[in-house]
Image (tube, rainbow over all chains, first blue to last red; front, side, top):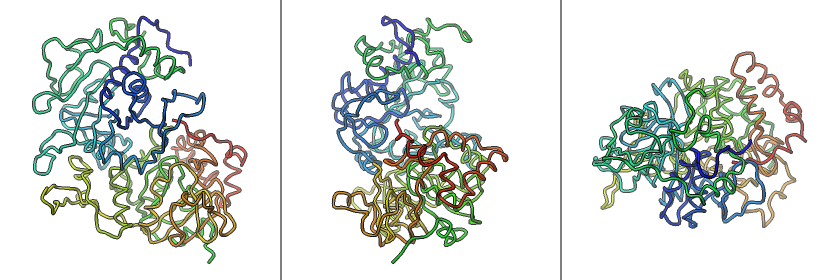
Length: 275
Length: 292
């Protein structure tokens, strides 16, 4: 696959989101960074190379890597730091020294997430993966989210159909007490960055991607978003970060497959729909 | 003490309605030769405990599942196993859906012979709503914290795939991640292992390799020689995931295509006939290790 055709002056939406996702590991120290999916994995690599050299990262199997491995076919030997089989992943995550970046199928105003089943649980309209490690991850360490298709189908009006990942709904907690280690990071979407830092862990709009309006984001979100004045623009990737992404982390250009048509970072520069 | 047996003999010793643990993880080191032997038998109404891959999909497609105890079913390289998806959407089997770690704790509780292990995992989620049999327990200490009492998951039998074994039941698992095969072995009444290579008695372990043994022979009831017995899942370092085969398997969702898949890959009883159907030893040995 040819690398995406963009100039070094500009950046693609994928590159903007990689940089925004990488920020989730800034200043987090010597923890395991887990990114599930193409973009989250690139974000881990970018965080490690840009501003958090302490991060632990794996090859997606069971090795800890001393250097991020480029996506796509292996181009050389792995630089291996250690062993991280699944049994150790659970031991580590229950201990809390991990921060994951995941892509839920549904998310609600409590920060609860679903990757198991859509519709009636006994006979789901769509059976997906299963709860996987979401319940344990959500109650043990911080999780951030990447959502490539910001819409009311993802950010649902009520609760998600199957709560896989615990959130801030006090009705769901024994004794009504939200547990100490529940930590929900930011949600990076194709339109904006959200978090759950409002009063009572309410959902907030943190920043807009270039060329996106507040109205577009609120219309695409099934629950109310707290908007404080004029939200800032999501910071662009630096020139150094773009070089790392393009030359070091993703020379095969797999990031061009994340969003349909690989649009530019500024929505106003996107070709009209259907073009 | 000779534990050697055929895959079909293993299955002949199992009973309808049993709870079976299936080792490996998704598309890695699944005892597929043993699972295919189940499909050749009349065995049914199974409760299956698995970190699910095509083992679950095959049993679902053949209508052998009564209940699935799982955290996920995944083909890794393909987003969803369509056989699992179709059966799950049709409500064809009951579910005990768990967090992956809860599944581990349930196996660990069974292996320790305690009724449950406490954990926070599951709190605040619908795992508890859909599993009303899972109860909470209050810490007896001063913290008084409410915890999930993850019940023991006892298995009637565990089916596991290892790299090498001997007729005594000594094994080594040389792939880089042992997953939770040891816990499945200890949680089970009986353990059957399939192996890529059958070795002369007493030659499986050396001092250097001993740490690659996941469980001792006293747990093993039967050993099945099954070269490429994990195919189409990986058993590295011997062979990787057969992505092409998984695509063919995943596409076999019409009655005609499923019958053809079954006739070609499930019906052959001998390992040699299966290997020939799957493209031959050379092709399988050249399957590259998974890269993610």
